[in-house]
Image 1 (cartoon, rainbow, N blue to C red):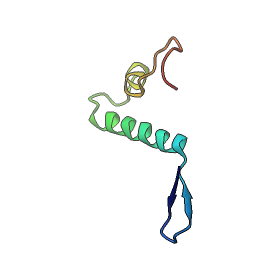
Image 2: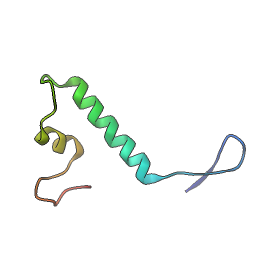
Image 3: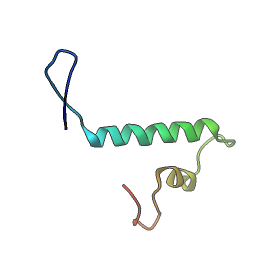
Image 4: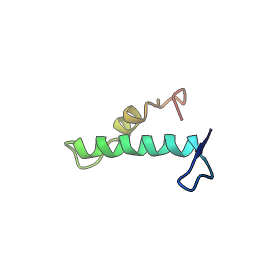
Length: 58
């Protein structure tokens, strides 16, 4: 996807990077609301919507 940048030139969006930023944000929100000191691996998988069996996203 191409959109115009501030200088009028083309700006290419990196969809993979944007997805990674979104997932990082979701982890940060989960960590900030967690009762425990650290997120468990199971909670991280839940936030990132992945399964331990390899059948999930990412």
